[in-house]
Length: 380
Ligand code: FDA
Image (cartoon, rainbow, N blue to C red):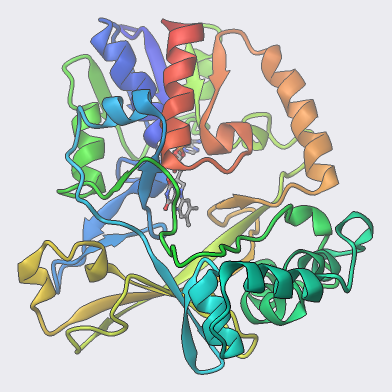
């Protein structure tokens, strides 16, 4: 085999490793079982409207990590997009994260920061964070019952398909409330969207004479030349698929939440006037609606059109064949993960990385940052 390194998975983690290795002169093959590159960050033009759609959910790039920012700018320019989210509750639209504007609108008041802080503190006194028995009590103890019920309780219940009283308080340590009028969603130093789309960025990372990409190729498919049994122990492997699948689920199935997306093309120029609208009320079955054209207001030709693409997002527990999106992380999952980590240590020259390989939610900048660390500290 004329290969120095096999990378399983062409998401940001796998492509960062592949690009670094190729630039250092190694011959790399990247395989992915999907028929496109890029993992969950993949985006494509919706053919009827030309609007860029993020196939696996909206992806917003943001980071405060200087070396990640320097690295990603080698492959793409970024727009000056700044993410803001709104929320429709009881027939009114509020700004998120909950901030002084949200609080004043919600209570029909003109509180100063100190007055709002005092009100929330008084309302939160109903339960104690230290002794709260479940997510409901903890949420009330953090922000008070009125704000918690309006913006967090049912929204989280829809995400987990479980009532707030039955959810563990462990799923939350704090709830975002700001006592000023800042409604910028992220706090990071750098933020923006790739000027010509995610897929162009991802393809540029793979565009190197030392990199071969093989799509539609599953690492566990024994009919493929580069399958698990044929390569492990023969050449170094960076594996970014699910860690439990690698070990054939011997230590149990690690649980995930998944999302269902309902995409629709509407015959209107502008449906909601903003990229993301949350729906925190119990009587609406979805959690949010994305309207993709608003991610790129600079694409004037698309913006002036009389059609738009929206996507409703529904959340539920993943079955074994669903796309794994967010780790559930129950105590049984944590026990299973430790067992898999022990098994992983015994695999000669196999490096587990990325969100699936480590059973961790990672933002894109974190996946890229951890891949750069793996390259610098273990592989180079
Ligand atoms: P990723 O999942 O992207 O790639 C893994 C690849 O491995 C996949 O392509 C898969 O097909 C492949 N694979 C798995 N098993 C295989 C096998 N047996 N054989 C071959 N290939 C196999 N981040 C952020 O910064 N801002 C954001 O706004 C969002 N938004 C967001 C929304 C949603 C709904 C989700 C679920 C996630 C986000 N993210 C995000 C996180 C972002 O998606 C994440 O950081 C990257 O996908 C991580 O890249 P990885 O390479 O680790 O995994």
